[in-house]
Length: 103
Image 1 (spheres, rainbow, N blue to C red):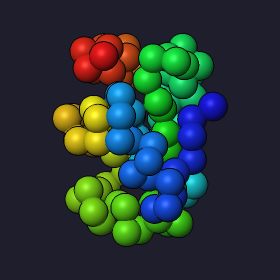
Image 2 (image 1 turned 30 degrees about the horizontal axis):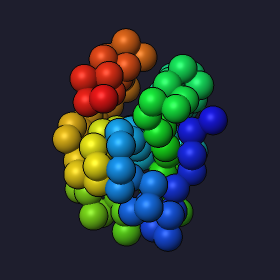
Image 3 (image 1 turned 180 degrees about the vertical axis):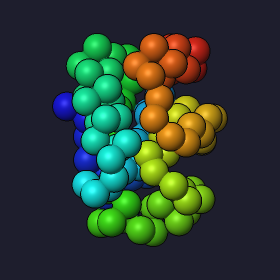
């Protein structure tokens, strides 16, 4: 399962290793299509990378901090720093390749 992050848990979760964060909202159609892909990757990459999600309705400060203007937005972090940002629905293969390129 993808880890649900809040502003209180965010920094600790991304500080080391590779983390993919999905910024989403329950009312967003494309987000509903992205979420199962993110959950699948979470299972496949367990122990290799952290897969997380942030509900932008509940955590507007985090969305604002990373300039999330439309959702879904997926940001790939390596050791606490953003290394890639993808806006819109992403395929599982594209996400997996980007994650594995950072490991």
